[in-house]
Amino acid sequence: MRATTGRADRRRERIGTPRARRGSRLGLAFAGVLLALAGVACQGTGERLVVPTPKATDYSGMELSAVFALSREVIYLGGRLDSADGGVEGIVLRSDDSGAHWRRVGSETVRFRGVIVQDIHFSDARRGWIAGIRVTETGTNAVVLATKDGGGHWREHDIAEPRAEFISHLQNLDFASDTLGTVDVVYLDAETSSFVANSYRTSDAGRTWVIGAFRDDVAEESADLGTHFSDADQGYRIGAPEADGSQILWRTATGGQSWREVTRFDMSRFDAFYGPWDRRADPPDPDAAPVERAARR
Image (cartoon, rainbow, N blue to C red; front, top):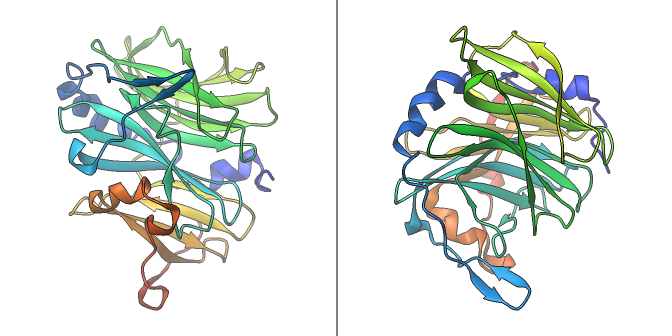
């Protein structure tokens, strides 16, 4: 079932949308990883491609920056992993029980080497899209990936932005149907040296994208990296990394008037995303979870 809030509501509920905050920070942050994007070896088993299961020691850090609530129970998180060899890799997590347990989507068939997931949209449990940037040896490209099997396999499509000196991030990914979608590309304009955004639209489920409108109302950095409501009351948001690198997923059942901690993510729990379902990451003790009061934005 699709989220009941409309596209305009979704944009209003996002904290810090649009997120040009990533502009200056990402521009320099990727300088050290552009040359470290070697390919990953895969194991073939007949027609199925199997990616070797990585371990937490393969990575030096993780940052989650996108959240999508298909319903109160089904939640998707997306972001980046920093590889121990200096590269980057996209990560998509899913929970089917309101954040009590998590698993890494597509972990047996896909390794998003060089991709950073920045926005997520699912129409149902099988059909979905992720948007973000692909880091290359020469810079960054805007990409949207689509799945028809719940994230087991993805097909990647580029969005050409000829005016961009550097693609900062993609945001406001939204699909009104299985074929009609929109997304904003925030980039550093090569002529003006300022961060602006173009809105792109697709009519073929994300295979091709055409420019829809130019935008220059790029907002400032926000403390929260992603927020999404499945209905008027139920929603989730992912907080910015704390000093120890951990991040908290918050949940509201009051339309954003109050928030409760659901899960704290850090690299020590990374291996739990691959283990048997009953051993995957559990939430903190509900009785000990702090409640944060905040005005709805």
